[in-house]
Figure 1 (cartoon, rainbow, N blue to C red):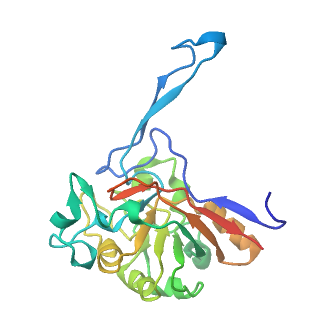
Figure 2 (tube, helix red, strand yellow):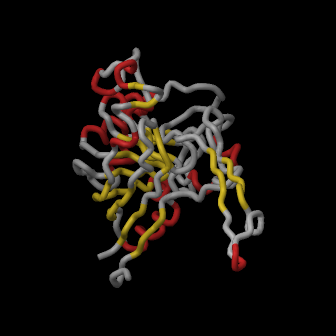
Figure 3 (cartoon, rainbow, N blue to C red):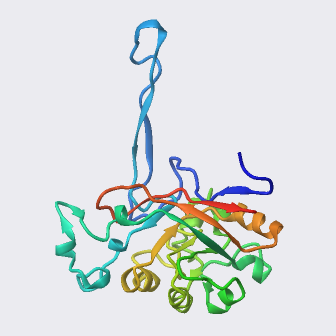
Length: 262
């Protein structure tokens, strides 16, 4: 039972076939492997179960620092060849990310700019962040662009043709300088992406993951949190989240929660 005045907000999108996914990652697939009645047991008892297939960077997920390398080296200068063993990352993997139970802060950029959502390809800069709460070491910083409003329009949400809003390099440096534990956003790549298909340079990934070892949480659902915090007159909350403990993976699904109130 929750204490009076406390609200728990789910920050994850539901997993369903056809949901938006980057074209460079395996999409989510789901099928019933056994249906009720396929196998009969005594006394009328039946069972049903499914098979699921997905990439580690599909749906609401966390990036491990092994997700990116520069010149063949991971965060801290660890050579990729030394970090990997038998097709798994024995260091820098998502299984080495500790569960997060900490202060969360929301940078509600559309609300600050007095728009419904940011335009495609809009860069979120330091000026947008200093207008919000001051982050503290160990915080989780979430950036809302309003892009989750396009969740049920996959081409628009992925945004290859239009571009996608997100933080720029200056904003990422500002957050890293404050010692945050993780940065999250409501888009696939978290960072500002201009229009155009194909691989992007992703400088924010390089800065946060490779240079600072700061995990990223992408494809978050932040619309309800925006309304809840605005009604409460705050931008702070208790963040709770842990990625699936997939040994040696570069990323994994996460179901983060925000606890708002006393």
